Image 1 (cartoon, rainbow, N blue to C red):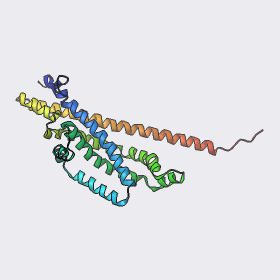
Image 2 (image 1 turned 120 degrees about the horizontal axis):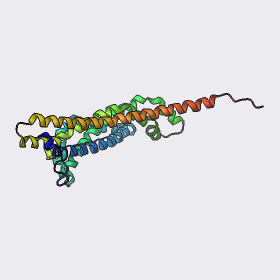
Image 3 (image 1 turned 135 degrees about the vertical axis):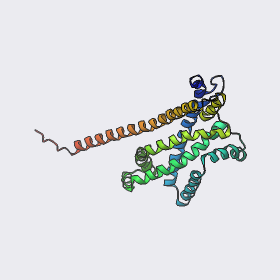
Length: 245
């Protein structure tokens, strides 16, 4: 029975109807993770470079976002945003926006800790070489912070992927909603249906975590290659010159 319903669990009635099921869950997760990462890094840079009063206000706002349950944030975004902005935002976009906001709040905190972990010494060295404070942050501190915080970012991405299951509150037909529909049509197969759903969520989360692991491996390889290149140039510069003749 589950095999017969597997195409519906994967994509709903697509292409004859709107995208749904696991494909829609993955689509929302990828866009929410990308938006949260970009916005979170931007907020972390803002917290690092902004004046103290503005930074404190931003930290208070981010703390409020982290304190609000994801379900309530999705609900408020769907009903309050059209009232405040005067525009209607689709259900899927509402969920992605809410997840990006709450993910950015966590990523900003993680990246700010990463900036602090690098220390002032490297910033001062970059400033001594003629870089501006923003250049030192962007070219020296941020790459090292990203490499150190990629495991934490991967955890946040996986959490956002699982939080897409809360999209049912605004009528989004994602994987858990499709599973409920299938279970309603196939009485007596609840264990098999939700076991298949658990496996699909596992595959989605494992894929997202693999992206984070791959990025971490790539950055470490580049860091080791750059370190070997610096040592090679240093040994050449320190090598004694051979006497002529």
